[in-house]
Image (cartoon, rainbow, N blue to C red; front, side):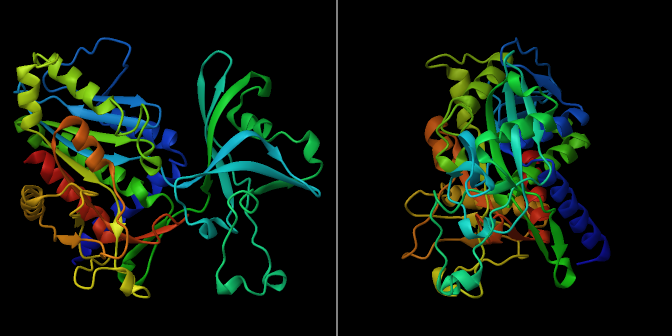
Length: 437
């Protein structure tokens, strides 16, 4: 790696750290992606208004924790296909319950619900923030992120001598963080959050709030090989697509595109994607349909033009995957063992937990070659269940040719995950090559 390469890799990693810091919740992530794209010349659209799209136009749409962005090529027509890069904005963790102000024995605590499948022990002894939105009586949403406010304190080993023999946390009784001391009967956690948002507590009628680690990400290791930060799953892919889009629209290549490039960031992937902002919902199909209609396609039932466009489209589902773990190599396939720093991974599963087939593999290798990026494969150990992604869900809904990719990481679903810095940039470079193809 040259010094120039090293500085570019480092700059990309630091920008990802900035994105994660600005995105303590999925709602913040969608807003931050839209903010950056608007700064790059994208026009913000509203779903409730007509879309006056024009050739050469750049557009972005936010629906709660989901964000979609696209460019309309100058030569686009009714049967122009789409190149969609899909990712997700949510991460495993904790969400605030109703009536969240709890506590006992002189402690103030927060009632939280486990979201997705986090590594519970990784959340212990960290300074945590509350982030998301407050909805006021007038229907307005107010994004908010508190300073460090909460902590899940671990029981001292003096009081649990077997803690190192295998720590198992009860999801209800042992995951309620503390946020103060005093009489819990008069405590109001939402008042603390409302004060940060500069919203009168009496005006708060609803909320969507999650816990997030307050610690900033760090680049470290020999040759700055590693990046540790929260919510890499899947903000690493969101960031890769965002940066690729920013480079694409800043270059002359955008004028020669023969397909519509789309960045699609969904919410609720960690809990099955079945929501109005998830990949199982209608959002992507609705947006592609409205783009097609603006280009003159007949998008109704049996619409010839739109079906032709979808048949000429690709969806790249990008999400993190597993690097071989040096201390647990037996949990991985004995032959296919991707490792941090050796390139993005092509995710393959015979049971369609991932969508990659031979055609998708060939296409990914071609885009990676065009970007000058190495390819690794990932496949599960037959004795270890395989996770899944938005890929099979979106592919089933729309019938678009789909493949699953990502970067290899360690500590997946931890409050602080570990990636290879070079993989982060490499994924973004292949995303750009995919859109340029």
